[in-house]
Amino acid sequence: MSYNSDTIAAIATASGNGSISIIRVSGVDSIAAVDKIFHKNISKNDAIINNNSDVSGQLASVSTHTVHHGWIGVSTDEIIDEALVLVMRAPGSYTAEDVVEIQCHGGGLAAKKILELLLHHGVRLAEPGEFTKRAFLNGRIDLTQAESVMEVISSKSELALSTAGEHLRGDVRDVIRSMREVILTDMAYLEAALDDPEHIEMGDYSETLLSHLDPIEDKLSVIVKSSENGRFISEGINTVIVGRPNVGKSSFLNCILRQDRAIVTDVPGTTRDTLEEDVRLGGLLLRLVDTAGIRETSDEVESIGVEKAKSAVEHADLLICVLDSSEVLTSEDRDILNMCKDKSSIVLLNKSDLGAVIDVESIRREISSFFGSGDGERKSEVDDQKSGIDDQRSDASDRISVMEFSARTGVGLRELEALIEDKLLSEFLGDSDHQSVPVITNLRQKEALYEVKTSIDRLRETIAAGMPEDLLTVDLLSAYESLGRITGDTFEDDLVDKIFSDFCMGK
Ligand code: GDP
Image 1 (spheres, rainbow, N blue to C red):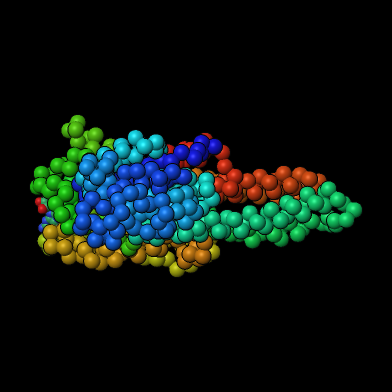
Image 2 (image 1 turned 90 degrees about the vertical axis):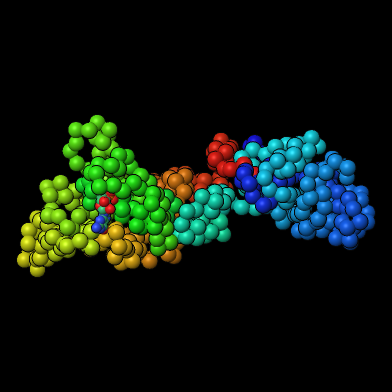
């Protein structure tokens, strides 16, 4: 493991203009190193502030979690900046080592000079993620908590942040470790019974084992299912705006963003490429993509945009199909509507402020015709098989909502936002059953979960095939280790190095 006991330091705040910068130092020599450059009093005034006229090294004996005002510099004559110094002693710190944080003025240069001074005093520059890596290697947090630190930092919606917060609290760790505990107990019993058959009764242990594995598998299934939605929480809902040129796609984007981001003109085909913007709704993030007008075109630049738009539709989680309700439906509109049938979609009858030529009912009928029921009425059950098909059709057409809208006046915007929130809850976040288990958003953890499921499946097959008990311990160990990889209780050095190298500097 690439852990060593060097004292490390890094600037923990983002670069650029800000009011304060923080330099973080961790390791056995952190307090002594900062003490060399920290000067409590350089004037009478400081002596009053600090209630102390002493000017020699002052941090060595201070209590943990205390804040100290002073000056940082080579000497009292060569000061870089005024600062507050926080001392957090092991093990009650972020890294579980002695940690000192220096808060100086922002702007970057002061922090950089202070960091250089520390490096001059034998402190090493920290690698990205090294502070959190130390917290993990020192056993203060598990790997899921370490990974959640980056989840918190990169959260772009309330739900992403609250999910990351649950991970940071240790919800994934707790559920995984409790499963591991059960498996460990079974492994221990099996090993003991195999070693000492005279005193420890094996009996039909496979039955007992299955009764222990059933609840684990049930829980795993719920976690896997709820984690399928994890992508929507961490990455947002990929929402693509489609419609032929000039129906008001860019105007709609500006309307929902409440700003002029997309170019709006009367000339068809002016949105040449895809535009992307983020909107937060219902605790989730909508990643809105405005596509170029989807239509057959001879303009080379525009046709590249059209291809991009088609590909955007393919990858969309949610489609917002814009129609111009002041014009009759064209064959291009029908083609675009047809794209909605395989996706969760909202059809906006835009320009409702102008005289409407098409209405919600006529578009619903149009959509129903794509599902083959023609008249748009829901059929009553004719026979079991037929009604099954109709149920599927109505399920599919239920995923398409149609509403009047005006990007110019904003009429329909509130209703649309409420509709999107409803859709997000019902279609993208699954049922509330999943609330009882953590939703896993991290790909590595998800893959390890699948490995655990595979190991347990194999174990069941081993039991079903009536294989000898010592083979059961092999499968149990594999499930145990896969679970351990999620929390980092079993880990490979390379993997841990890779995980932390994706972290930001100073974290
Ligand atoms: P896009 O090509 O689909 O992106 O369409 P634009 O957003 O560029 O809009 C095309 C034209 O329709 C512009 O002149 C807009 O001002 C106009 N427009 C867009 N939405 C509305 C609306 O709700 N009502 C009216 N009256 N005009 C609109």
